[in-house]
Length: 385
Image (cartoon, rainbow, N blue to C red; front, side, top):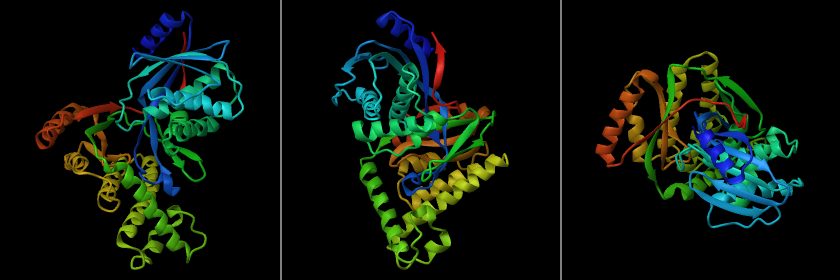
């Protein structure tokens, strides 16, 4: 068990009993490319996680050990320098933010490791950042509230690591709740839980194994296109601040005034926010079939209107459409590679995995990785050793 391995390594290195903290990865069921348009997202914390064994020190030295890479790293609380080793930057970024918030930290000993796959879109980086922020808050009794921890962890990645991520990943990491998905309002940062307790269903990710170079440049281009659409509509409707405020009827009035590509991008985002609300209503009514149909619709929009899919993602979704035991499927994340997220009946998961893996290998000559997950609680103290 991972928690035991992490604890054992900690005791071997530091000869003391640590606090153990579990920090989960995440999936996003619906609401894609809506976050930077001040819309809604619907993530869940999952059973794959990073475990931290940690204890405070009396000096300013911070001693880290990454179990998965079998690497150590040391730094001083007051001396934080970006390193080419990369992984320590996520942890130093958290300490950097705590310093900026005015918290007087001592050093700490820390061993961490986990089973969140790197690069599969389950946000191992947010699990490291938010997990460490939570752990340091706990061992030093800093008294930081949950939402401030979220913002602090996000800023660690934005400012120290240099990745301009949104707030969803850190938010669900801290606020995740077993048996529930979390609807986050990316404008107000308010949230609501919706039940997702389907014991007969697994959340399955099929990893394309590809990462197309288009991803970052096209992501920036989509943001720009959405902004251009808002700027034009705002000229006639002064209350419009983002696509969150635009209705489909309003947008259709601009079909001939907007560049066709910009219209398509805006149309997708407006429709996706609408799908999000319908999806939450489906969960309230315990109607997973309707929820799954909305996931398929989201993929169509991402493929045809937002144009951030790719042939590998499209093929994986195509393979699920006619199967009555698969409730929904879509690409998850920024696009141009990564995973599809699928809701599959437990009794056909293995058979489906084998069939889809075989067909995917035949078509693209890529071995398909599959991750079977379930919904878990957010970051918490796992146990005292």
